Image (cartoon, rainbow, N blue to C red):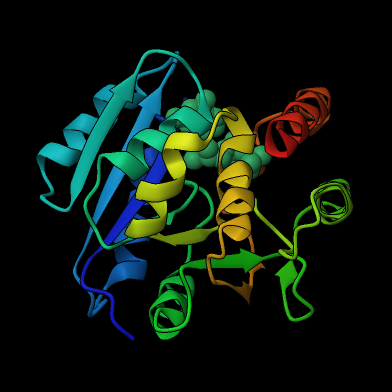
Length: 232
Ligand SMILES: Nc1nc2c(ncn2[C@@H]2O[C@H](COP(=O)(O)OP(=O)(O)O)[C@@H](O)[C@H]2O)c(=O)[nH]1
Ligand SMILES: [Mg+2]
């Protein structure tokens, strides 16, 4: 059980009106966390004042930093956050989905894991999202298991990754958007990384904003591309 410093990275996009309240909740969750930590928001492609709001909040709080890119891309934001932080463990959260319990589980498992995943498919998970989204998670996982012979049950939730794995694997990842982290985990798994899954409790603190249905064709095309790349 050795974690020296946790870097929390959170991609944000068009979150100007939600950011202040969400960060209040995050600070509350992190109260008395014994492990030193910092939080990095990575904003890209926002059409609202997300960047301004984020920078204003960061100016008042030494725990918080903001990174920025022009093009809207969730995966590119994660990549930047992973590469431009320094903690020996990186934890990836969404701005509407994070938990202190998960960080405690990361610390507890750090002696036997290189990656810790919060799995919505764990038998003890409590996933309170809509039926459509839960079905999507299930189908996505069947594709990973059968199409990619992966043993993990969920690559899309909260995750923590050891710095050495990030340094080794990230340069090879080509997927962007929502497949970036999936590819990183699949590659790490093939590389022998020790992956521990813990049950997720998913209660999003606001309704999902991105269209689930619109994401399907892009995700399927991305998976086909990934399959070709990984078998090459
Ligand atoms: N930097 C960045 N963050 C994004 C982008 N799209 C979504 N996000 C962030 O990713 C997280 C998940 O987005 P959300 O809309 O809740 O999607 P969900 O996966 O359907 O719940 C939130 O923190 C968003 O602000 C993007 O294009 N760029
Ligand atoms: Mg969400």
